[in-house]
Image (tube, rainbow, N blue to C red; front, side, top):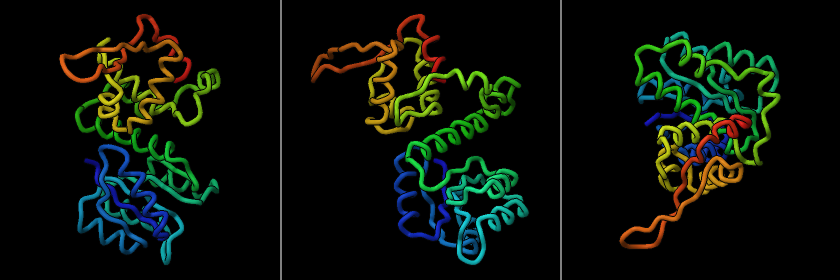
Length: 237
């Protein structure tokens, strides 16, 4: 589990962030701090992998926290969640090593995208001692800008990062059928969200549905990839 510290002075926002985070499999909230001093105390007392950090905090700012953990050489990653939308703040956060930057107010899908992307990178770095340039490029490099302009729009509520993550899990199955529940569990999102992505993949002709009957109980709807359909999905990722 990825252990998270939320640093947010607004109790209601902190609670929303906590609830959102707990909806994504693989993450657990270790603690919530309402100022920088408390946050610095907590990272000395408990194990923390990731911090969801606001900029505007009482006393000291989120940048003071970033400065402190970098000076201490703490191996802690930070995702900024803040109303600070000026380029100076954004650039400063990135220079201090923030792995993502979310501007309030944000949609849950955007936070989910940030967490899924972080989890995927953390998983690769943990299970592989060495990376090839190709593997590293997948983690670090954005898609080519010209290619990005040619991508087709996704339906509202779907994100490219989550779609890519789901598609990676589907292709690893090499044609093996799977249910919505099975894929939701593997990827770490809700069944409702997964159903939206699988419906979309069926609509563009990448997946086909099959009704499977067991020896007992109700029949189960499972999905399987359509042969030679990989080019269709590339238009969206």
